[in-house]
Amino acid sequence: MIEIPHIIKYMGSKRNILDFVVSSIEEVTQNENQRLYDIFGGSAVVSGAFRNKQPVTCNDIQSYTSVLAGTYLNNYNWELFPDNIIDIITEKIEERVQRFRSKYENLKFVYKKNLSFEEIIKLEKNQQNLLNQPFNGLDHLFAKNYSGTYWSYEQCVWIDAISSVARSEEYKDTFLYNIIMSSLMFAMAYTTQSTGHYAQYRDVTKSNLSDILLYRNKQILPLFKQKFLSLQEFYSGENNSGFNHQFLTSNYLTVLQNLEPNSIVYADPPYQFVHYSRFYHALETLIKYDYPYVEHKGRYRNDRHQSPFCIKTKVKKAFTNMFEPIFESNSTLVLSYSDTGMISLDDLISLAKACFRNYIISFKEIDYKHSTMGRQKDKSRDVKEALLICQPV
Image (cartoon, rainbow, N blue to C red; front, side, top):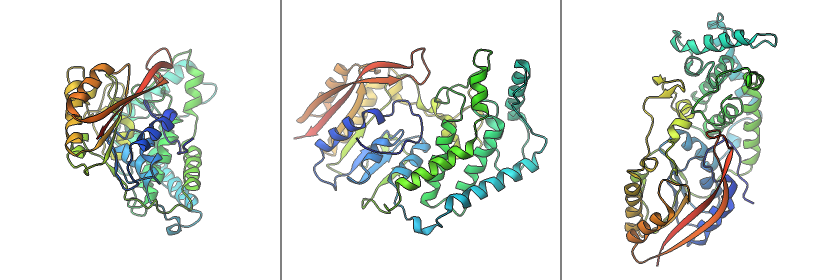
């Protein structure tokens, strides 16, 4: 069983079938110097599994993937920092929180046990209205944009503070930036009152009140520290993987146009009509920290990426555009897809045969429970996860 740290809840993550995917890639790998391109990195767990196996280029159009990949693939030299680095970081975080509280001492939103349902609704609404509140100075992106939505105001203050420390001069250009931000993403995933992603937050109702209050009172800092220490322990004593790994934020076609000849491309494109930029927009904003204009109830960024793999009229062309540069570079393709995808597996195989002339084309399937992440009434669905492998003769 492949061990790789868990960081975020991610729709479509290959964590539960990682052995199946990794062993299939290893079967077509010629040597340890052959570069692996993970062009739709997502949660970066597949890339991370190859940390000590061969050089990896992990790419995704979403910025948060580069941080996850940076955690899984970075070179670590813990001797650059004191043994009690987490205590130093925590002290900086707490200092920022106190400064913020002092500056905005009139902003207090407390979820007391004896509040009535109507009082809680009002408390939520008052936090949501901070979107129109003028803030001056100090990092306040989450306090302004997301209070009373996926997180409480108090939780957002801690999110802003931790992010501020990560982006400070001491850490922004070191491996600790990725460790801090990944640990924060973990804490955010387990304090949000949404269903595992950030497409919508739940409105408070009398039936879900106790559950939402449970999440509203969860603390960011202990979860952050817990994940930081576990990542530090996992990657202690392992300073350098020995490979030149890369983590990029680019369009997949740009990466494919610059493939090393005779490389391996692992592709795990979206299967359904849902765009990942809608489900993980809050993580994208966390990493960019660019104070975007947000809209709709979900507080979405207005510059969200739209994938052609999620659009029925564009999906065939998208696959053809993917296949051609892989074929031209004489590289091997390992493609993950599902029998519930936007294109049938039969059509996908036909496209591959037309593009990969004189290639050996094989096909594998595994039964898998696909999590709906709360999008449907059922929590998971039985699907067949498929690997299409196209290899030069």
